[in-house]
Image 1: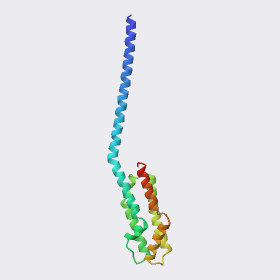
Image 2: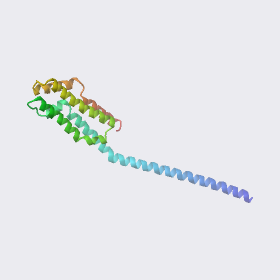
Image 3: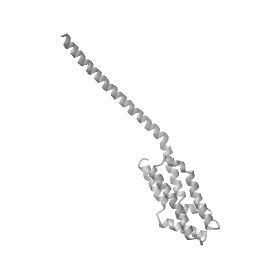
Image 4: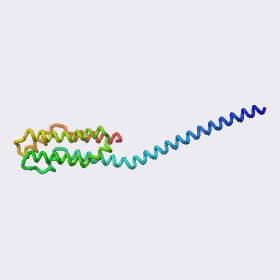
Length: 169
């Protein structure tokens, strides 16, 4: 009879220890999940506003470098080369002012923004180069005309920014 009590006691002890270990494991898992949730919450409170601001700033940048907008803001000069320089310099300055935003923006979308900037600069260079003997007024009209005929690189990049926001960044 002593052995049967010992075996039963041992079985009860094993069941008790097993149940205790199971409860302990569940407790630690729920604590880990709670901490992860708190970290995600803190992340969204701190990082998400910065990301949204970066997307807003890059949208503004892309709107500002659209050829029609750019031409309205950059004063015409006497010769086409200095006007080209002013337009390209304005784009580059705007871009450098917003360069740090790439930290918060999807890398593929950042490449599209960079491509839009480069395509806009190339449009300006090619138009001015092909119209070297024309007046700045005629060049302005041609740049606007070309940007209206083709889909603006900025418009395409803005669509990507919008898609990122809608997908939850």
